[in-house]
Length: 111
Image (cartoon, rainbow, N blue to C red; front, side, top):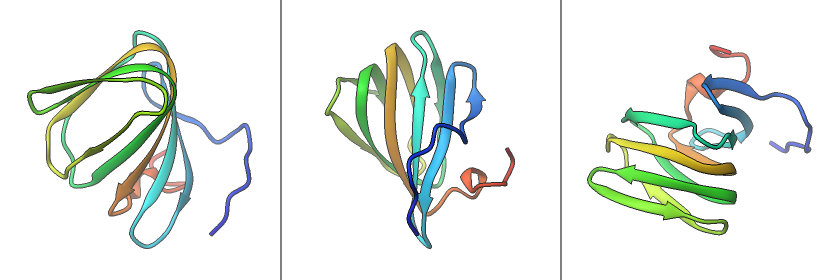
């Protein structure tokens, strides 16, 4: 599967956070997130491994008891079923890969 860049396709899942699925396969799904300064990803866990890269901006990730301030070029991996949250310190863009695929992020699903 290939995907060409386009300006549309974003969905707001949490206030201040827009998500767009970029591409997916049988085992992984890649999504882009545009996050507004002051937005908060509430503490949660899920059955997906979540690997990400901060393209621009500044965020704090809280995973378990660990806090990590991410700057452009930084990356992370949050294991399955680990509670985590995030605070957006500056307008940011992040790209994340989920495995197994998040069915709720598939185009046309729950949007």
